[in-house]
Amino acid sequence: LFSPPIFYVIKSTWTFPHSNLQDMYMHWHCGDYQNRISPMKYFQNTDVSFLGKRARMNLNEVKNLMATIDEEATRKGKVPAPTMTLNQAAACFQAGVTGFKFSATTPTGKSRNIMRLKWSTLTKYNKQHEVKAEEGPAIDPEEKARQEFVEISPDDPPHDNMWYEHDDGVKRRVPSTYKFPMLGLEDMYVMWHCGQEEAKIAPMKIFQSTDFQGSPMVKRGKTNLSEVRTIMTLIDLAAAKKGMKIKPIMTESEARECCREGHTALNIPVSSKEGKSRDILKMKWSSASRLKNKGDDDGGDDGGDGDGDGDGDADDTAEAEAKKAGGESDAEEAEVEPEADPEDDTLADLELPEAEVDV
Image 1 (spheres, rainbow, N blue to C red):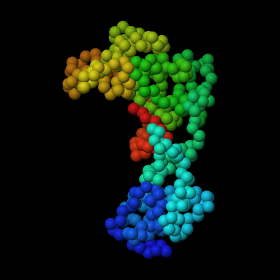
Image 2: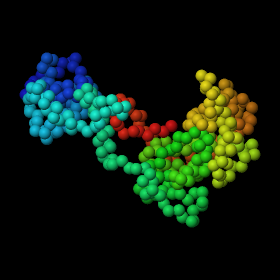
Image 3: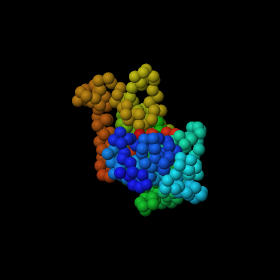
Image 4: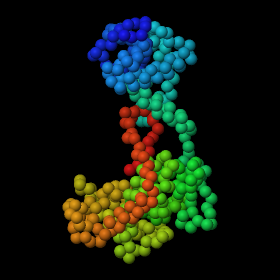
């Protein structure tokens, strides 16, 4: 039975309404007279428990949404009454719906009609909006990096003298707002050996996994670093066997030359399955990591070398050495950053905070 003033029993065939926001507001304050369902504002969790846990969660989420509308309507002089007609409820809704703050247009420029939004969609958006408000105003990444940068010390080696002091007091080689670079293979090789002087970032080859701790914008920093180290080591070994010098400190032109000589060790097919040609030096390093050693149709499962021909040649030795190098680096740090939750794509038409996407 419902609480006063109306006593009805929910039919066993009743389902939780997933209507638009305005219709849900009518259900909340006026009920469904035709189906003899009382106003939902009198519902208790026990009334919907037969539908399962999700129904109880839905009831609480709807209650929060309706409270936002009622508060705004009251502020504007339209006070919701214990019992209301449809017209009275509609007037309160029109006055209170502005309590939700979001853009009137979608990211693609289309007009957004809040009356047509499902209440569940608005609930998810409202949660994102609350989280964003709690985080405070957006931080300018460049300004934050300038604030964290530590003055260069003459005691530091010239290739490892750029540090950033994070809010926790720990100095790291990247600022807290750092985004892991998703560059082409050749450009990544240059960054690996040369760093980014203008951005005050040291060569990535001296990075440790601890440099990414405390950086909320880097979700897979440790894993990415390990994958990059593996393919860079393969290129270094192959370039060295062709007579190139892999120096501790390299110029950009030297790094590019080494990459062009050694990238074939990755054994990446020069064309896709559809027959399209690949520019391996320009493909993203993440794609190169995924496609390496795919150049042979029978590769990899014969117990032989890494290039799949079973002869235990130099390519297999290079692959083993690269994996060893990556493994030694990983062993230095036992902490693994947690994986991010999958992104919810149900709000494609809303301006939600952009998620950082790491490959």
